[in-house]
Amino acid sequence: IMSVGATTTSNGIASFSQFNDEVDISAPGVGVLSTTGTNDYSTYSGTSMATPHVVGMAALLWNNHPNCTNANVRKAIEDTAEDFGAPGRDDYFGNGIIRYHPAEACLADVNFPCCTGPPPPTASPTSAPPTQAPTPCTTGSDFLLKLQTDNYGSETTWEITGGGTTFATGSGYSSGTYYEEKECLPAEACLFTIKDSFGDGICCSWGTGSYEVLMDTVQVGSGGDFDSSESVNLCGPTPVPSMAPVVPTPPTFQPTAAPTPTPTTAAPVAPTLVPVYPTEYDFSSGFCPGGIFHMSGNQLPTYPIHQNSTECALILTGDTTMGAKVAAQVPMDFVPNNNLKFSTTIGYRMYGTNAGSADGMTFVIHQDPRQVTAVGGAGGNLGVYDSTNGGSNAIKPALVVELDSFTGSTQNDNFENAVHLQLQNSNGVIEELNEVSRTVRTSGTTIGGLWVNYDGTTLTVSHDVTGLTLANAEPPTPIISVDIQLDTFFDPTKAVYVGFTAGTGGQADSHEIWSWKINQIDTASPTASPTA
Image 1 (cartoon, rainbow, N blue to C red):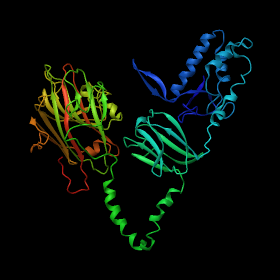
Image 2: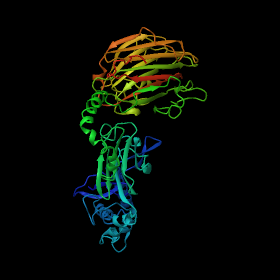
Image 3: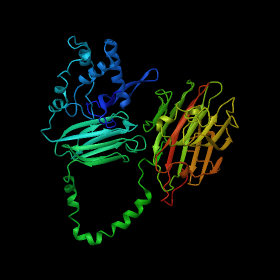
């Protein structure tokens, strides 16, 4: 048995690779292109990607030299590997990184058949130091970023700035992949900033990502558990004196200034807990051009789309598309300390020229670990439920408000056309909180309204389908009102996804969002209104 280490695209050892005295050989294991399903590709990282390189190479070598033994093939692979790390075998690379052609030549050597001679002398001279030497930094300082991305590598970016100038940037990273980024920086490049577009850092909710920053081989910063961004000072104490003029100026006021600001600034900030994500989205005038949504489902890129050629609707499905399950979602902050209070107003259309209709559409708040990939295609009906309650594809945990219009079947419901309020628990089982018989389909020219409000104790749902304009007020009497503790249903320390799903089955149907406003109500504000 051979123990295989994983190497990076720059011939370093991957951060996840094992290292001990049992490592025999190394092979590419970071950002490896692999097939997925029947007609697609994706990149993966791991020793599970490195090992097939060695297995495939060994199989090809032995197939070419069937008279050689497995021990001969192993010796050929180890003796001809390219030496990296410490000279000779080491606990990280083992005997080095595999090379097919030298191994093939060793087995085919007529003087030493099956690689029975001494190891070829070409392995050591091609080791790492000669390849690193030609790139010294003579005009500044050596910057090295060691980056391990989490499960959502595309959300990670970084930049190096100073004096109003951006000196280097990085983006377009694959998920679960180790990278090393090197730069030669001038003295004024003093601030490294790493960012996560979703706002949950790169550790530890969705994969174990991390970063380490070195200047001239000395570590100056590291981490991974941050929110939207985190910065590292690359210039030691240098940036601090730039702030110094502000500090020396008020020493004479220190006795009076110090006690005054402390109580006035600290008190209001603490309960507010400045949110990571926007706490309000307002598309009351339509979705042109849109751009904030995470799109998912089985109809990408046709649906969903932010607009069509003449209108500004968020088109979830079209009237000619059958079997669609799609979703559009945005991340929102989930402020701790029992502060989940929100109100939302939705203007929608649901119509079709085909006979019958299918499934319907939902407003969803969820914390499924699969994030945006959970909704719209992964699930069963509407891309949010599973075909069987409690199935693995169900979106969970989730609060679901469904506009149900499944003509010709109640589909385990009490009514063909209804508004449902449901919880989908962590085990995927649906808990029907309320179901109200309701005409939910609009025409192709009228707009229906859906209002969902939660004040921390009571959740209400209001609905109107009588041909609204975008400015119509919420009906005075809700159709659903239930007491529920969402703060205990959801994890109050993690973000939620908020958005819409739609599904069409055997009949095509149009599902469109024409306006949307949602705001999270701040409990610290006594004037906060529970309506949008």
